[in-house]
Image 1 (cartoon, one colour):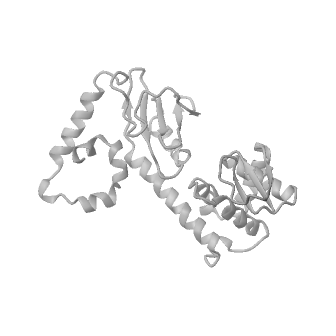
Image 2 (cartoon, one colour):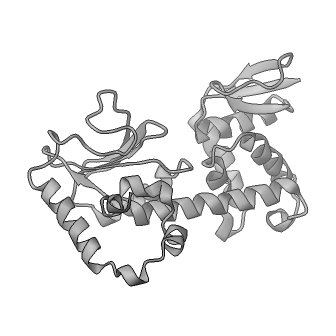
Image 3 (spheres, helix red, strand yellow):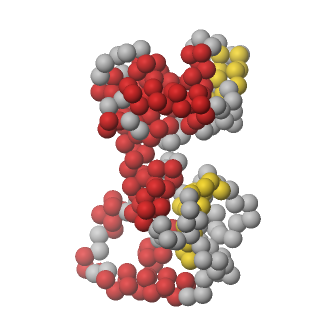
Length: 257
């Protein structure tokens, strides 16, 4: 029995898939080096990320998948669900073996699971576009701390880059402790060690906020309060459209807590 370990990145996973074919390895598990090892007596094979090998696998996936599902595997991987690597691996083995219509073979539990999971990830990415609120800091940076259920920042960065191409901004994942910084040139991944914001709510410390930012937040809360019709309040419907787990990141919702 062999377990393949990798660095936890998508490129690392694709490299692991490449090496499983290249070395004729049929692993019982593929997991991040930091992950929990299920098979105590299995031989461990660690794979170093090779972007060229990862690109070859990715091109192969693109050639095999239909247009609407070309990002299907990537979306599923970003879910970080336990055991997702082996589900994708088994799916890819079928895909590369030449099976037709595998994308719609919902009798295969892996295909069904990956399809449902990729949809959940895409839905979470859409929520990030809807519920993100930036705070303006003294150094001219627009900061947003958020805690998505899945690792969806890679899916939304391009949208924010198009929307705010003339601004400096940082979208930071509080749960995974990394973010994407845009400096009017191109986004780059960053990790902040000395945090000037709450790791729970993403609220920037008052001493770091741009002068007037607090006033605009209060103004926004006031606007939200005045357009809210008490007689038509429906918290159940509100939670369906705006899950409560996002409320702590939205200034306008703090008045309901």
